[in-house]
Structures are given as structure tokens and as C-alpha cells.
Length: 181
Image (cartoon, rainbow, N blue to C red; front, side):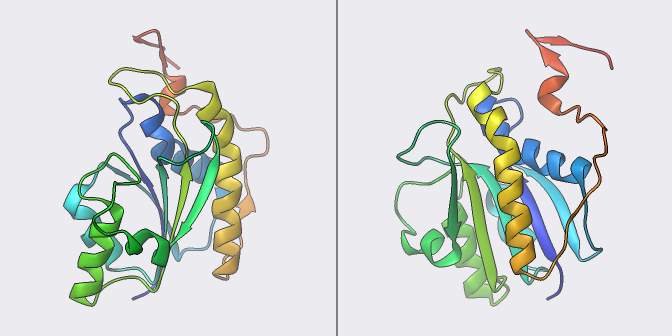
């Protein structure tokens, strides 16, 4: 196993559930990483998450998560925390859960040694809902958490933004209209 994946998980059509892909795109457009880092938008991978985990020595997942906190709060979970409640209520709206996918990867002998989930507590998740200001405002903080996690794994991220504007998927939609950019 080699490399590190930073993987955004979520449905971009479901309001705050788009937090993972949105933050992954924020990282991709704002930082330069060493070649060993793959920034991925996995959408809602379900059981396929297990296969996405296999090739990497470390995976940082980014997702909307349920937690006893205000919307927009950024939370961090490590692999043991993610796996301890295999049958418990899922942290994310994706099926199977991250815990189930990690357990399958462990059973197959192909689990990354390091798995961290950076989560953002959502305010609303509904088909066609826009991302809420609380979650959008938390995106930069969550991205900084990811950059810090990468630093602990020996990766330096260089800020490459230099005045570029991020036009994310939610910046393209306004009141169900496509805005041409």
C-alpha cells in the first residue's frame, strides 16, 4: 500500500450532504500536494468505499456527520472510533456505513493503517436543498483540519490559491437555476 487519499463523500444534490465533495474541491483548488496525495470525490460510494480504501496506506474521509453539536461544527474521528460501533446508528447517511466498509477492508486484509474522518455537522439534508451558510462557512476550517492531518502523515500542502476564486458546485446553482460562468 502506498499513498494517501483525501476523499470527499456526499451527494451534491442533497444540501449539506455535499460538504465532503465541496471541501475536497476546495482543497484541490486551494493547495498543491505531493504526488502521493489523491484528492477524490467519491459521491455516495456505498459498498464500493471498501475498494477505494484498499490501495492507500492512509485515508482522510470528509463527510457530513451526525453529532451532538451545532450545524457547521467540524468534528474528527479516528479509525478505532469509527469501527467501535459497527452496528450503531450511522454517522453519515451513506449505506453501508463507514464502519461497515472499514470492517470489510480489515477482514480482507486491505485496510489502510490510518483512517481519519473529518466531519461537518449538517443543518439540512434534502433533495434540491442548497448548502446552508453554516456548513459553507465551516468548509475552510474543515480543509485546515485535513491539511493538519496530512502534516501528521508527513505531507506538506502549499497554498496555491493566490487570488483564484473557487467556483464550487453550489456556487453554480442559485434558486434551481444554472448560472453560466
